[in-house]
Length: 120
Image (spheres, rainbow, N blue to C red):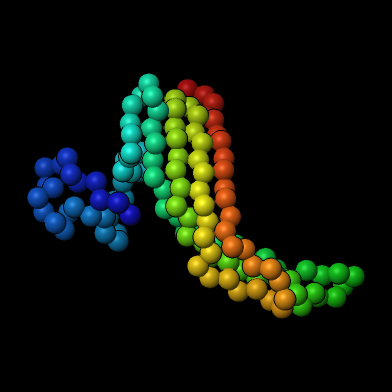
């Protein structure tokens, strides 16, 4: 959660300067920005916690003991928005791996995406 009170009248109140559980959380467009211009786009810094879970595989009705498990990643990244286009990239660094049996565990992962909004 990000505080967004620096330009508001109650910014001098330390309690109101941060988001708290149960209070209104600013929309994603109100997040801290590295750069903002309607003509040049906006660059946002991101920090996510992602999880991934896989069930054990079945081969010919038998459960494979060396399959399935879970990972939790902390993922810093960047998002660039220009008009109705958005692209993002993040680097996932595993902070917890729990796999069944003998399996390779991820050292890191990269996510990249592009989206466009159609309509008014």
